[in-house]
Length: 299
Image (cartoon, rainbow, N blue to C red):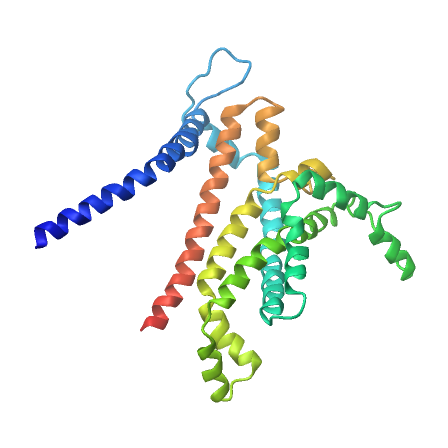
């Protein structure tokens, strides 16, 4: 009996691997292979126009430590993540909680909130370039109506990055909103009813029921938001080209400029792997914090 059961499980596992095989092959060819090749390139002085590509070991990585522009790009990327990850997730959760109340016109609102997500970064950049225009942008237009001076949103070193962050939050809030809404609707109503019987108010229900039950969704959205913000490229490339005064130079843009403007592919790959290590570390910390709390609750 046990032998036949074991054989059935092996056959079931083999069938599963067979179904997963096409994806695994594509993952190996288009993800693992290029990543390994990128690391190989980062260990060489790899210039596109150069005939010789000498092996330099970790020299490219050591050079990053003394590269002022790389340091600026890392700080700018961290600043962008700070401006977008928490505020963007808070906005998405707020929208999801509003829709979770099953208000009239829910489908139209979901469509309206999600619509920016389907736009390309080029279209979004053009829309917000008009909005941020110093001369005819609608944001400065309303500032003038309120008696306030117009701002140079994309030409000021202090305002350029917050402007890109605001645009990015508007662009991506709808996608995370749907994920949060799915998480909210997966919470059993009995938990809220029990909390109400115990006298819990709205704030207490949110703190002791919604947030704990929504923790896996929060983890997913926060991890994806950190990864996405660390790869910000199109916004700064199209709207500001890294300026003014390097205030919007991000790591992804610096990697692109190093690789495809200066043709130093080895150094550009080292930049990419340095960013990968930093993001991986932050992701592991996020998993550690949230999963540790879940284990604590289980006790």
